[in-house]
Each structure stands twice: as C-alpha cells, then as structure tokens.
Length: 297
Picture (tube, rainbow, N blue to C red):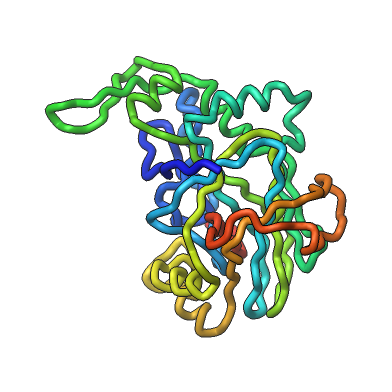
C-alpha cells in the first residue's frame, strides 16, 4: 500500500467532471483541440443522499487484478439512480498503468464497477471509463504553459502546444483525476438496506480516501460541509444537508475497504456474500457520491 498527495487544482485543458459542484478538485482531462462552441444544454441536478469528501484526502494505490468492496448503509426511504466513485492516476504509476492496459486484448472489463443492493446486482458498467479517460488525457497536445515571474501566474502561449508530460511538469500536477460514474434506472431503497460497490481493475490505479473512524463521523462531516442535499446549491435549494439528516434520509459508508477473495465476474448477477470479503484498510472511506439525478433546462 502506497499513499500519495491528492491534486488540489488543475488549470488549462481540464473541465469539472462531477455530478454536482461538490468536489472542487475532482477533474477529468479533456481534449483542448477542435473546440466547438455549443449552445446551452440541459443542466444536471441532483439530490445527493450520501457523500464522502475531505480537505485532507490522500491516495491509496491499488495494484492491478484487484477487486475491492465498499459497503454502504441506507437510512430512510428514497430513490437513487446515480453512483460515482473517485479514481486517480498519480503520475508515478501512469506508465505502468498504460503498459498494463495496452497488453490487454481489449479494454472491455479492464475496469468495471458493479452496484449490489441487498446482495443482488442492480447496475454495472464495464466500459473501463477511468482508463479510457487516462489514455485520452495522455495522448493529446496541450497548451504551452509557463510561469510569469512578474505576474506570478501561469500563462499559455497562443498557438504553441506541448506534450502531456511537459504540461503536467510545467503545471506541477501530480495526478490525473477522473471518476467511475454509473447511472441506472431509479431504485427505491429503505432503512436497513445495504448497498455494495464492487470495483475490479486489471491495471493499477489510486483510490482517493478520507480518514474517518465511524459512520457517525461521516454524518457530522456531511452536515458540516453540506456534502449532501440539493445540488447545485442555491439559496433556496431544498432539501439541505440538515433537512436530510433530520428526516433520516441519507446513506453512510462503512469506513473500511474490503477485498474479495474470489472476485465475481462482470455481468454475472451472483449474490455477494459478506463472508467472501475481508477487511483491507480500516478507518478509511473512499470519496464517493450516491444521488438521484435528473436534467432541467
């Protein structure tokens, strides 16, 4: 297990990749070429029922061919249709990750995320989206960036391009951020239900986590930092974090990362047995969002 620093910001050639404006530092690298101005589109909105984020998050490196399990407890009656788990690729492992990915016959099932409710498979995404995002991020030109000592700011030279590695070095960016987002038909959950995320990856990656001792501590963090509730936030947005807690409608994450001794097969709707997993790291809660999302315009 190796720990690394979490990226606090990214500049030129990145866009926010998040369900809501919840995690300030959660980004995906996007192509900067062939940009086309598009008309206004529908605005994504969410009621976030469960979330973990913190200012002192760090990365846990996960080796390839590993299956981790995360467990969540439901408090209250509501519906969810959107789950997102933060994934990082520190620069120190990118070459190793890409080498492992390019050795695969295809990327399908190279990284997949399954969502189980009360032990049964409810949704799965096996499109290896974080890996594809990493490949796209490293395989494109970027603006030439330099540090202006007079203005003490980073600036780019119009029309001049550079490589991915030159760009991240100039910007002092230690990792690439992405996430694994799975949307599915709305599912009603009720008190006592257990939601399990099973994440398999054939290649190395990093899991952003927070040090949290208990689910009670998570609830306090959710209220303190408004991590749940209506998003994007606005002065009259309801429900708020406090309202969800007061009405007992929220999801907490068990602050333990588990490993599967016998990994389930992607797409196989088998029952996940708690007896088939073992604790790997305690007092550790990966960064995530569970929400009901829709579009409005």
